[in-house]
Amino acid sequence: MGVPDVSIIVPTYGRPAQLRACLDGIARLDGARERLEVIIVDDGGRDELPPLGASAGDGVPLRLVIQPHRGPGAARNAGAAVARGRWLAFIDDDCIPSSTWISALARALEAHPDRLLGGPVINGLPDNPFATSTQLIATYVTEYYAERRGSHRFFTTNNLALAADRFRELGGFDTTIPSATAEDKEFCDRWRASGYRMGWVPDAAVHHFHHLSFRRFLRQHYNYGRGLLHFHRMRRKREGRRLVPEPLTFYWNLLLYPLTARAPHRGWRFVPLLMLSQIATGAGMMKAVLAERLRRTPAPLPSLEGEDHAGA
Image (tube, rainbow, N blue to C red; front, side):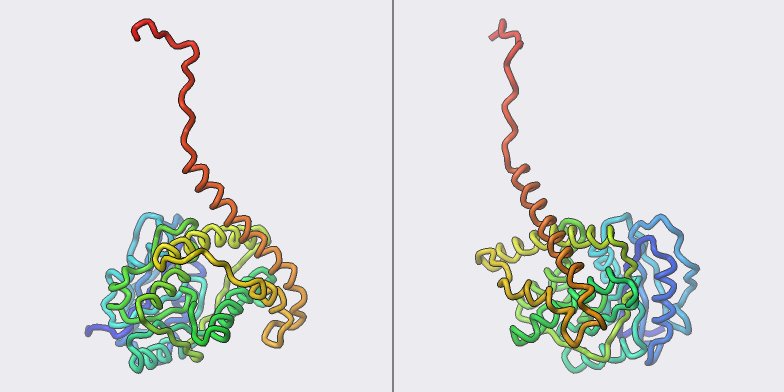
């Protein structure tokens, strides 16, 4: 068996049914099977994985890496550490790639080997309002940076591809960010700070099947706020500039985004959920600030009342 061109890395944690659907989608990818390998990283999940065999579908070599639970960033790094491919492509276990996903990314990487590439992430659960709202936010942020700042500055880690040597050169994903969030924003920011460019590949789409309840929706955005503050502080330390939030128009236009032509039918239904998401994100940031201040507060001196000082 020759060395593959592309290593597809799939972190997983306790979602065997979703993982099986993801692997079935990978098995249907266009292109030569011998050019691919799939690396599944089991991040300490308690549920048994589905029977994996030696390949994902028809002839795509498959390897399994098992590690203690350390979060998705560490799982992606573990997969990249054993990858043999020239290119790395990251996808999550609750995503199913389009048939052209890898072939489109591989062509773009051959043409632009020093770029970080991303493609469309399509909500696979349009009847779930919480999944739809979350995807609206991610799409808005991606479009915001591309349209208002002239280039893409952010891709999510469920649809990301780059050269393996560049990934290792930058040290992979940061695993110190609380609640295992904002790793994608931090990596993209570090990528650009290192002088590399990013590129959009419209034919490299994945469908995201993110089952969310109202409680999990709020918890996700609360955790995102915790990670986002940490990311901004890391960027401030790296670049030596003040912590400056996005302008108020960023948040106003985010709340109005469901009313645009690019949003789902009857998009007004999602405006309240987007408002709640931002409140939860702000609460997560405030919690992170308070927790940090408490850690910095010196402990009170022990009381000397009632102590025997006869030997002093």
